Image 1 (cartoon, helix red, strand yellow):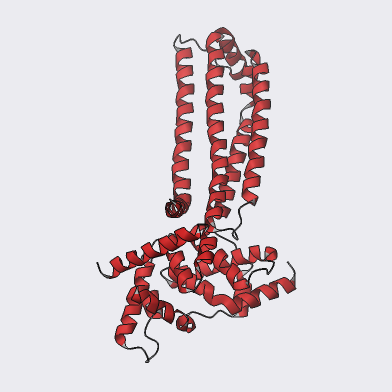
Image 2: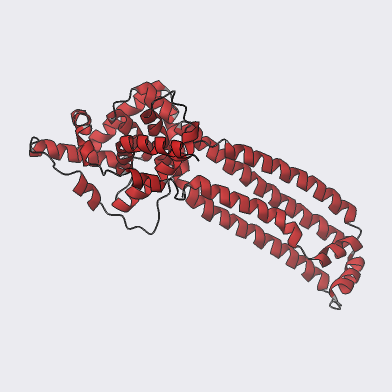
Length: 164
Length: 213
């Protein structure tokens, strides 16, 4: 692989790394697993990069590869003990402008999203990233109508998780 | 869903909370090894292909002698020719499916490609087990109908002089027992390896299919 390609890839990934971190945080429960998944997504992105033609935005292309890696290709390493500490530490109150109730609601909602299955999480993630249903449907390989129906069902599911 | 909308509004502002990796840290990652299931499936599949192809080569020479002496050579030759043509067809399809696995496809297509690559190897193994069973039956039929020749061949090739009248029965039963044990081990291997490797993928694939129903 030539240096130019490496440089172009790393620069773009560095700029857009938040997308990968968001996926990692949603699909893993501790720092080690987060780093593991980040690593795997990076490798998959890099392997696919020579075929990336730039007809879509780099970030758009990242969603697909990132989610596919998290949902399909990534295997959790068994020896790791799962903890939830990482999550609670990192998604904590950061700014004073939020009052406690808002912060609590955000926390509860995020925790509820984390309880969803892999596919539902992907839908919610793309929804939170402000993707339209066409894009969500394309990424997952389902029809737009079904993506919409599914999203409504997930909202119901989240409601049940929050108010059992 | 008010809370989900609330989370959506806050989603962007949360971005500074995520870790920030440096250029060098990301650069280093390019040269690490992937641990994806596709890689494992590929390794295991190639091992399986090699195992079944290699089985022929590790069979002891003397067993071919026995087969030859019993006049089974034409049968074995025809069997082998057909067998290797089928093996090549399988390898072709396996390779074709494998290279079609692309992480840039939609999630559903990606899963389908992985599952179909797996299926090719599974059919390959089923084919081998069936071929193995057929060969076992045919060979034992020859043994049974030409037991005099078998005794003679065994004596010449292995130096076994069977004088027990029950020898032939024991010989045949032990062949069948070994055959059945091999097949059971294989099925166990399948349940363990693929059960673990593909459990998550299959679960997620079903979930995606359910959306489309």
